[in-house]
Length: 360
Image (cartoon, rainbow, N blue to C red; front, side, top):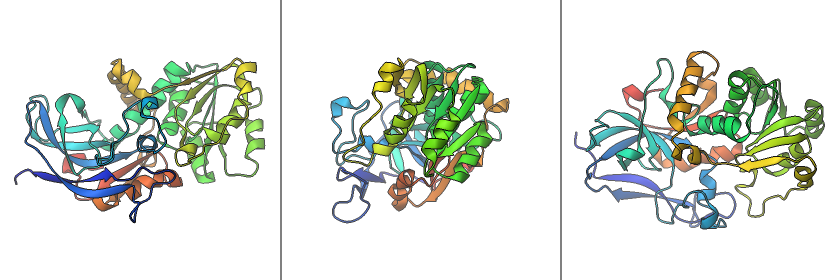
């Protein structure tokens, strides 16, 4: 069978102000067919098998974000929606990536993508582990948890750690890394349902609090008696504001995400900013790409792989929400991120895409 000369892809049509719109004249995205040029030297043609769904994609398309304030260039209107993906090399002009190699890269929302070989990360499969975890616990989200805890927050055995979004892709890895790799004395999770909280506790959290409970603020105070040294913040907003008042003196906040504000044209402000001064808190934002550019990714990923092999880190079906998706439904599956409909990593499995070697 000859390789395709065109591909379907979802492009950014209109920048959203609040929740992205999936239909009608103001639809955020548009499905098109684009031509695929011939491969150049050191390029590969990749068939996308799985797409990573990440909250950070939302600011990339925001109408209000100043491009100079983003850590990566925003997606241009008319351009393919940016996304990490896992795919199979179906044609190659790169000696290090022969046909059949599984890779992760920025494939975008496209059925096929032409990629530079040096932008692809070949996967070394781990027996008994689904390859999709290389988009989650062993991919960018796992590395975000690792570097955020170890290098940004400098968490250790003497620390109590609070993590918001604890049932999400990054948060669930934070729980496990903090408790089982770094030996932190106590981990407290925050999630959006009782069911999610019980799962977070099974990963190693001493307790997980449902922020939707009317008694959440009281429960947070009770759970943080004596205060906490580290907060890994995935959500921002009101929860960040509450946790600032529960931080110990010289506490550290790893600011990772603000999903509570991503679909708001007027995000909530902080009322407890003075806590940063009075408690001498250290609040540091970080982007995992910084550590990858420093060449720290491979060693950290290998450490995570070894932790999985040793049974310290659990990566199973509950650590990812795998959604079989027709290509027409790619935006709809992505929107589940903002509905709280997933535990662990939310991944789109493109129907008709998965090869035998990449089945999960």
